[in-house]
Image 1 (cartoon, rainbow, N blue to C red):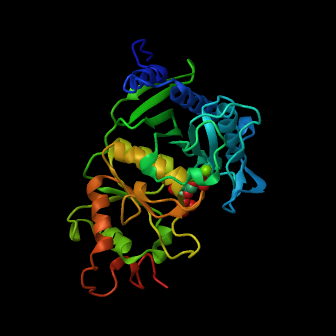
Image 2 (tube, rainbow, N blue to C red):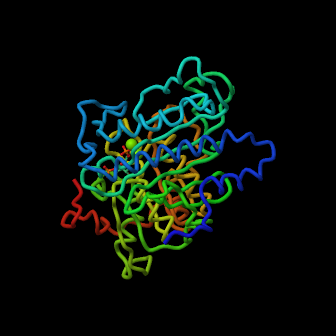
Image 3 (tube, helix red, strand yellow):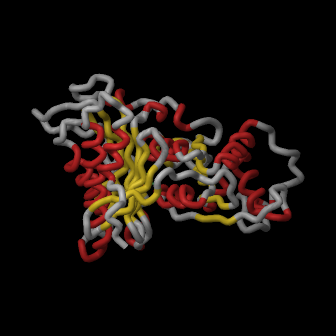
Amino acid sequence: MFDIERTTLTEYLIAQRRRHPGATGEFNALILQLAQACKAISRAVAHGALGGVLGSLDSENVQGETQKTLDVLADRIFLRATHWGGELAGMVSEENDAPIALPPGGARGKYLLVFDPLDGSSNIDVNVAVGSIFSILRAPLPGTDAQPEDFLQPGTEQVAAGYAIYGPSTMLVLTVGNGVAGFTFDPILGEFFLTHPELRIPERTREFAINASNARFWEPPVRRYVDECLAGRSGPRDADFNMRWIASLVAETHRILMRGGVFLYPRDRKDPAKPGRLRLLYECNPIGMIVEQAGGRASTGERPVLEVQPERLHQRIGFVFGSREEVARIERYHREPAPSDPGEPPLFHTRSLFRQN
Ligand SMILES: O=P(O)(O)OC[C@H]1O[C@](O)(COP(=O)(O)O)[C@@H](O)[C@@H]1O
Ligand SMILES: [Mg+2]
Ligand SMILES: [Mg+2]
């Protein structure tokens, strides 16, 4: 039911700006442009097959992944919404090898934008939740075109981060470094309203998310953690755990923000050229900032992901995040030697469900 008293995204941003007396309004303008992009993508997602946005293109992105129609459309929408405003000095997207050039002759601003226009692309054609992720950094040389190396800043330097989830309802979840707020989109009014102020991740959880088809490539600390969860009440954790896998980082993040849990896409031995699946700059860092701002923990599995110095724009890395206690436990398992091995753990036993080669 519509409530006239609800805070809009614009009102929220104006209230946040009061914390920064020297603020010019450029930052808020940029966030509102991003929200506008998310509204447009939400509309395209909602129309599905009617809008002709399902299916794949013949093209591949820089990661060698086949691009979906919606990947390319969402990328274009982000670009169109932000590149003329004069707030940006540069932008990097998952779908583009190099930083995207800003229009010649247009103003250059003081922020850098890094984004994954459409996250969870494999879910588009099966009508499961997808999202968009963005991160905002400061440009080292405001007013000039950013260079590729300018984007290689650790996640601790992010000014803001957010994601939109296009699920049964569309939501924008945002941190400007002062906690995390969730806004629900009213498609009739075309406005995001604050519905989830001060989101906090519960500290303790009995739910984990991992792509178990990679089990044979996991490193021992990850195997140990998952085995202990699967052992349930009869194992060392003395508790039954639930498992989830949506194959959409945004959707997994949203579930963990709403009811707790832990997510693992760890470094593994599947492909030595890819130390992890997820991309540091536009997946792990923004989600990591949101998670930490919501009282959770975001890690490479060994240390805080936000402290990693990026080396490449599209760098991949192991990513573990969620409820603090569980992530701290996984980090501890990476530090300490595995408990004396009484034989193969049940999950990897040759006669078990996930047979080890
Ligand atoms: O195919 P898998 O192993 O389930 O990987 C799923 C992961 O890949 C991603 O979809 C990658 O994102 P993109 O769709 O932006 O490439 C994550 O959202 C998700 O966590
Ligand atoms: Mg993604
Ligand atoms: Mg993507």
